[in-house]
Image (cartoon, rainbow, N blue to C red):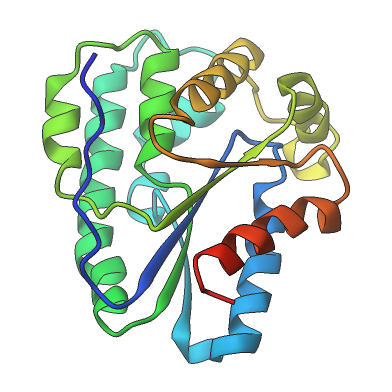
Length: 214
């Protein structure tokens, strides 16, 4: 399988990405990171975004893929094409302009989510995916919020807003494995988010300090 190669960030701004399965505690880490950076740089200098954006999230195809038990009518390549085009456009119109202005961009999920999901579903010969990904910016830091998949599943099921959602538990387990497998090659900073939030965030702060961001 080809290696995922992204475009170097040559701008003065910094791109900070948080990855992880649903239920891993990623959202909490993002909130704490945003608060910390806004305190240091000011709200105008910190941009918090999410991928994929509503451009693809609100389509019938994406909604069916996320919340329907029956995927027999879904070609997952179509979903990947949808979200990839969204990521490319989002980087072009939002992420890169912010980086050019020297801002700190915090991104909730990035291309690594697409790759982990693609591999977890058995799609391993998708040359087009790697060709297009070369146009995306390499993050300065990628944090992987990680917990045992069984804990992530319990967390999701414990959310009132998720009580009626279909959850493919085996897929979540496989995605978690793919994230761990790519962590070394992509230089992820793995954060143990099974511990309390402040203990987990201490590891985030340590890496931010190392990169001269705080």
